[in-house]
Image (tube, rainbow, N blue to C red; front, side, top):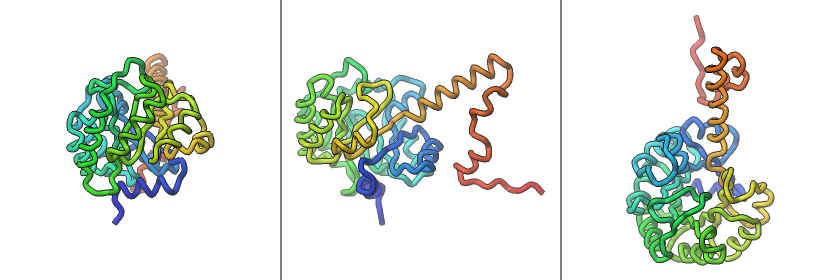
Amino acid sequence: MPTPGSRFRAALKTEQPLQIAGAINAYSALLAQRTGFRALYLSGAGVANHSYGVPDVGLTELEDVLIDVHRITKRVPLPLLVDIDTGWDDPLTAVREMAAAGAAAVHLEDQVPAKKCGHLPGKHLVSTSEMIERVRAAVSGKPYPDFVVMARTDAAANEGVPAAIARAQAYIAAGADMIFAEALHTLDDYRAFTAAVKAPVLANLTEFGQTPYFTLAEMHSTGVAMVLYPLSASRAAAAASLEVYAAIRQNGTQQSVVGKMQTRADLYTTLGYTPPKEK
């Protein structure tokens, strides 16, 4: 019987590069599924910002993320990659808990525990040897071989691309299945990564960050295996929500913005729900 991890690996073989859609809750996961995505992502920033209303600076814990993982995987069968930050000082337990909650894959990073968003300045990294211990602990927590442990390196911003590649190679040697190359600037940076790292590489195309909005064709040309859009839909939804709130507050009615809203019928289509007919 397929596992979540094997479904993630199968999606990676089916679509190259694999587009991974960020989903902050079960309903956004349903919308991503409806539009044809084959894999989902739960961002640590998404949990912090949208579930708890705080910045992504290491304030949320394992239990906070698990709540959203359970909700998404219970409702949507697509394989889910989960951001587990630095592993909360216990990567082995984090991996076991994520897998038990239905996640297909996790990524953990080489920042210090008081981490920052990967596209912000002022990041501080642990040593390569300390991150290797994190990776080994995470790998030892895998409940089955196909579960994916991805190692993220933020070293390109602080130490340069060659140093980031060296770290990535060390993380693969320590047992990581895949690499998350954070905050690269050019297509040549990605080409250098994929040429040197003998494992699938993920590119994070988050908005308002350090990486340009490369197209899927451009990413394909670099040999990148996965392209991530971690918060695109949730950022758009937040902007639209603010516009609607402001219109209602200012105008005393929602009439001017009803055309921007999802209809009740479309909601039911997404939910797969057929309301009872009136007698």
